[in-house]
Image (cartoon, rainbow over all chains, first blue to last red; front, side, top):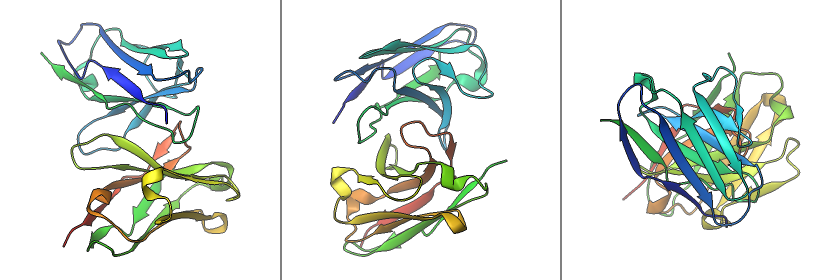
Length: 107
Length: 116
């Protein structure tokens, strides 16, 4: 089973700042890495697929990069609605494992 | 807008069974892999099972193998999860998901609570 490790566990920033979230895989997942955003009480929302492709309707301030084992989600300038939990997921091997999440909170 | 609507969750005793259902609103339901993803209270996400477009391939996470069965009925745009011999650790919100590993649409989730 591929283990995804997200860091940091919690990130405290202010609106307008830049956020950088990391996801590291225990073995290569090529570019089969997805990012989701989840707000309390809601289902996750697809942000980025195949490491760097923004999903439909996702603002340009969200970007993804990386391949192999190291991936990054960047939010260029935080908006109030961006404070949420972010998960990465790989689809290289079954089970399609998730990272444990990074909570982005308002500083 | 495409919708996935789950039903069938509830309170069940350890060792009991439940069947979750998910109905999709789009005619292209049969074009997608589908999956079930769960989230224990206050915890992260876990892929439970997935099923190929035509139902010919199914995969399960080790913790549910032999207890859970995923199935689909494309004529009814429906996805199912039969859960037997339930354990306390199966307590979670179960999401119906379009796609696997790259979920493009999520249901609202249905809560399964396993407790005596």
